[in-house]
Image (cartoon, rainbow, N blue to C red; front, side, top):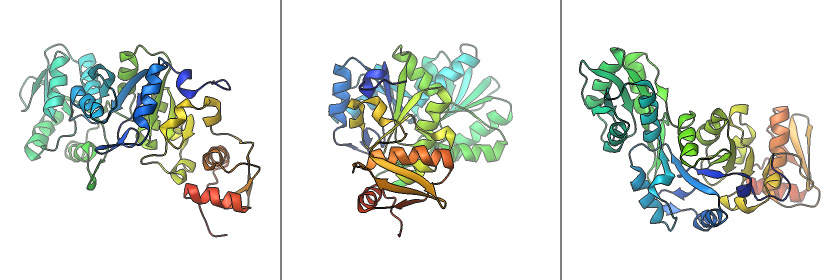
Length: 337
């Protein structure tokens, strides 16, 4: 448990950062992130960038980050393609043939794990690995389908149904995985978030014994951390909102909650959901009734609301005074009074 006064980043020996929604939005870094990550490094905490994207090599990801003035070495990037290759290598003999339904970067990871990537079903195929690739078509799915129906091990890099882009949410690897599920009746072994292998691979690469997962999605970043047995920080710079956070199931509840990554320099104990001395939150008539007790910090209030909502199951909120109303409005939790 964190002690009072310790900066959150100092409590852990490695920080496992999600990328899209946490570090950047598409081609643009989130303001302040480069400075925060630089400060974390200078304080001696290891940094890893953990992504479900299996279409880019670690070197490509590192280069993208450096283009945003965020220092990153190739060795600091952990992708779901790497995690999938690790899962395959742990279960197959060296040199086994693997049908790759995905990008050349995924095929390279399979080969790097001592296995033989192929694109077509054959008598010697032992497994299928599937990751996001914009070029995936029917012929690729057909080869994977044949191999899976013949009994091959099936590993999915991730099951994200959508992929965030500048044009909006587009089909992700999970949508393609769903097609093979429908065609085969089989279920894949999942390597990326919210499964544990990707987190374990990233932590091991940093020789970390106490890593912290940092992300913006409850269903992948936080759920994956829970599955892997890691503490987690949810930042509200991406997918999750205060409303979805209050309604989070136990398997998707973070250890810490903050508005942005700048919270990594704040005392860890202050970021944990729980009662807050500046706010009073009571459950009354199926609502969380909020009144201010000297604070106007909306995110302190959110941590107090999480504590009560997760205990009671009540997620509707009602302000008792103008300060509470203003804070709830900032959080997007306003309701008519």
